[in-house]
Image (cartoon, rainbow, N blue to C red; front, side, top):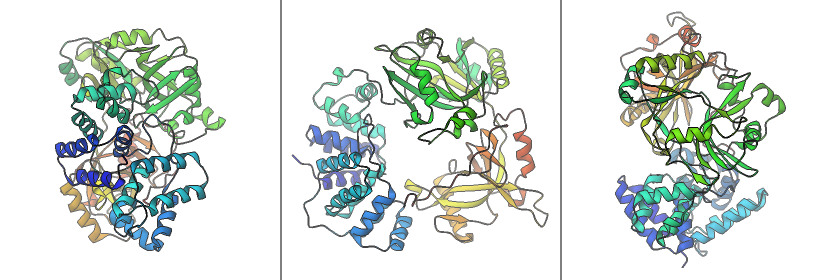
Length: 564
């Protein structure tokens, strides 16, 4: 059996066309049941937007420039026309589908894609990559086939089929409980392999494997120590400082070590010192913790660690200027024993026995509001972000946010900022101006030379209806641009953030960290917005742990045409 790519396309387009999760699940389940083992693996994998399984560390190394060169040559399009199509449709796949020329060659099937992806991963030669891609695109008989080939290459199907929907579709396809599918995926990592096990009623044969990232357990925010005390209801909880770093998990077996972030990305190459330290810890394990900038026994401002992210190699100078350590607060697997279903108190006990070379986050018991408030003040005195509260009886629940783990963070006041530029978004927001750069006044806006200085950019916190309304306003007053529209002062946003840092990214010299839109201040005029001096005042306050951070390098905003 050779399942055609066009069948995959039809099913996924149908799933994308409905907003009902149950209908998406039904469509996919019916499709999965019709496939043999190998094509089932591939179909599930490609529905995830992956060229390879999640535990396969190969990459296609095929960026937008290579794909665009091939597509332009196949279609014979002018570059200007091609760029305009992408701007109109928000991504390359849907853009080229509208102008695709039907092929008379033999059509593609899922195995053809797998073979081509293997070849792309094996070669670093750009011309060979283009030759492989051209062969594939020339066999796309329909525009939607070309679209999905592109979508899989770039890892973004945009069908609205999230992991939970896909897991439910696999469960429905083979009449299995969803929890069993999720548990099996947790153990072995690959949903495509889980699907084959489910098909043959072999889910119970799965055993835990290292070197696939698992979802992190999450904490529920608490606004005050009093609210947190009410939530824990007089029980004893563990309190730990909430560190301001990169949440990470370390997998180790023998000499092999992998570090994964919350986004499931590998960051080993950026942190060779953390890898070396993990190698000195005996045994086989999976640890949960935080990578923090660290010198002389103290945590440094987060900006130090930013200088190391995204680098394939770090120089001795970067390592010396921006030292980092991994501070563990949980162990999920050790020497063949899976510990996630064990209570936290036992996991902490085992963590303490893993040797002196492992940094461990201190934990102590709290019960009522006064205990929590005192622990919070100690965390602030240590210049940490806040406080974590954890039930000693809690199991480790990947991806869950319940009342077993709580977090209490410092709160900065909000700022009224003026939008200075609006950009088109991504996914379902690709046709609306939904990403907003904003600034504050450098002085009294009544003065003739007063100007707005940018302090950040945000997209979360506004409703779809507000985005449509703002898009109409910004397009009507835009001062030019296609993807990014500079706009005159008109709209005020109330912005919340976690910290303020010094930065040369913006003309203001400051950047709001993790900014988010609380609301559109329709009731305020642009001249009512905050001044830079208020940003400086809060930056220097004891509530802001971002002060003293190293300057960031200027960052070029991403565009649809990166790498082209």
